[in-house]
Image (tube, rainbow, N blue to C red; front, side, top):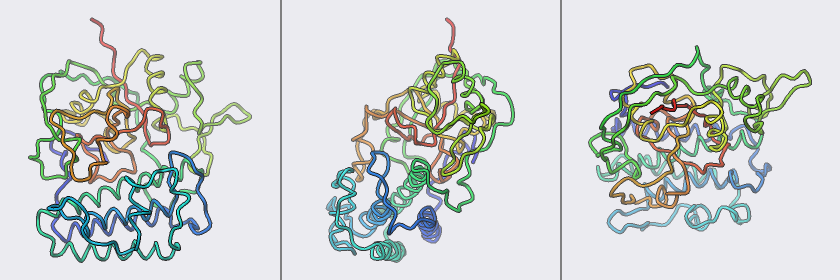
Length: 384
């Protein structure tokens, strides 16, 4: 999924009812396929901060869709109808149910939860047919929320060393085709963020388009590779990644879900925390791009930057913060609770759906997170 320039920015609201219904079915089929090879009735995920219990997360996806598409009243600003599953709010509302207790709740049987997923999707598709235009936002919200969780499910499989699902695009990002070179951008004034003129779906943290002055900068044409990161580690510059190991002959292997494969020098470096990305940059005499520089490059690239969207997520040096005039959308928990504690990543990974990733989309994670399909692209350090 390589996109360049302004012309390819909007993926968004291309949906009439039939297209949106097809997208919702597509997202659900992908969700179910991601864990479809596991026995979820007997498999127990460990209680660690970066994963959710399998049945909880799958049911939460259905709960979220039901809440916003079937139960929520924009006029009341709240859910006004009961759930199809009794007490669903007490189980699957992520704003109400603390992460650590999600392993301890007395959930309905797995078959009942699976039926809940089917029932909510069927009811959502039926409601979509007659939904007024002002409700279309909530169906797209549910769709993209499920897409995000789909990537989180794949991250969980990697974290827990479980087998990869039988999905074609789960193999990883494309390999680099040549040496990295610096692409020069002249910088200048540009409008950062979204002003509402695009037909695509806009998240609340993208709103508040504002003028930004970007100084001239040079950005690498591709992300840092495994081979380059291995050289950095061998030279004593950084930590040995937890998903790497050394063979008896001294060569390196990388864990891909439940399998160990030989390190691929031309593959993008992935699963790297922000401090390690910064350490690599310092060792190389480079730096991470700011969020503004990354967006400027994405919107002014003319095919010179490889894998900018759809390779690996890319760390920026910018803390996640609201744009001027920020106001939360109805899904208030999406952005506001995470401002100033997370850092911005950009670009999307090989597994991010094209309808989600684009040049202005902002993702965000705590700087210590290395389970994300995230790497780094560097910028030159300018001399005065």
